[in-house]
Length: 115
Image (tube, rainbow, N blue to C red; front, side, top):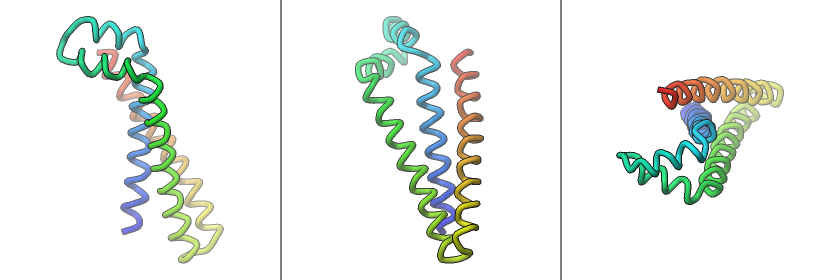
């Protein structure tokens, strides 16, 4: 059951990171253009623009909390199971997994934003 919590923490952290990177890739000018067009996404674009810094801060906090919780669960499981060295190796592998998932998610969002 702890494995599900670890996996969920890493996946959610990677998703939050991808959303943050996607917003940065779009940029304020592009979001402003979307808001000015008045299309189906205009309302959401205007809302994000009105709280640009707050949105990024919330995404950062969520990312840090989720990833920290995943690492804490992993360390807890390993310290009480396999020992300290195994827990450190697991934490390192979680960081690599998080980095890989984030890179994949960011690439997918950039491709979707470009089309």
